[in-house]
Image (cartoon, rainbow, N blue to C red; front, side, top):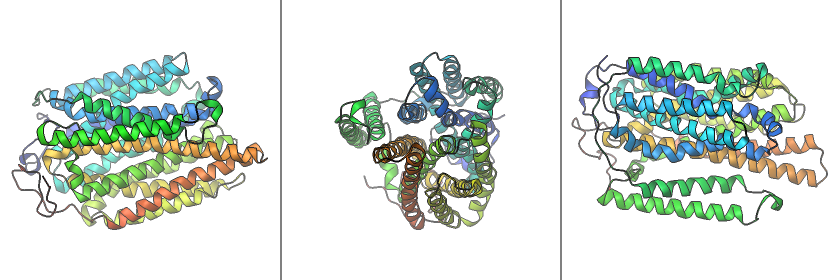
Length: 499
């Protein structure tokens, strides 16, 4: 196998003109799939965990939100990390950390240890996503990106969709601990085989990192998502001013983070180069992906709670009901990539965004006796629509950047995707809990309160989908004009970058 190019976006144009070896992507996609599967593998187990550890649903959802939030904090540092190590070293480090967190989770004696283990898992996962995306943009020729990105979508978007199905099957056979016990040997095997097949070589350089920016991003994203999760919380669970205070801290910290990046772009090395946002196509793609992922994760955590809490289904039955949607999304990913290569993005993104809105709108109508066929159809429509959106948007957004900004663009995209997912789950659970509490106070029975909360939760996703449709309509159909052959500058003829 040929030496793997160093995945920081600094490769020459020859990486795109010569026939490259795509074999390296096979192992990166496989590893990324197994680690990202763990984003949502706990969703189906939340009702069981609330009883076993005697915690609230809001607390239990942090097993997912905390995972996503950790990724959002770690991912911006991966640009610096990937410059200092080869692809093989980055792969080995990411998988070793992930396996350590998985082992700790399987043995966790308390809920707090389980949350900490999820944080360790997420740290390893955070390295794999930018490593995969940046490697794709570095070695894959432009004419092949749609097809290859369709396979990448399997790991980045389909794996979370299949999480509840996988967990449903495992939970039907034994303890929630097997959610990690079953994943661990698979992850170890992929690590061993991947290290044997990935090239040893690769250029590295000792890049710098601004740790102040890292701290500001942590103090921004963490309190922001925590504050969102506590909206509507009863005063008996903590100070009434805490959610607002956390939101203020988060917003101020993120403002300071942005200001520091802008200064470092002039006289230093920014953690995230925000000049990526000056490329209109990329900026639109970033917004669309964040909103779509927020709606997707919010609905994914809500559906099992409804099916088990209102309809009385088991974890296995819940997993089987959502399985067709996840499988449809997985099977369509590569086909969507091929279609994108032929016809561009708009014939896929616009119908996909509309289908996403219709699917979520249908789910707002669920009740205590809604036919399962209707729920299944709405979920399949949602997953198929997301498949039509994710692959073109990934390809279009990152392809709109010049090569020197690939690593920053992939890091920013992955960071905002995870923050959006964490915020989506937090906001949906907060809305559901607030609505349930209000209905119970008005005299509704428990089932009616849960149904009312579920409807409001899906309504949040439907509102987000409306914005997704608007962005999809104004998205271009293809990547703008290509870069100069040397790829030395940061400008496009039709998208100038302002100093």
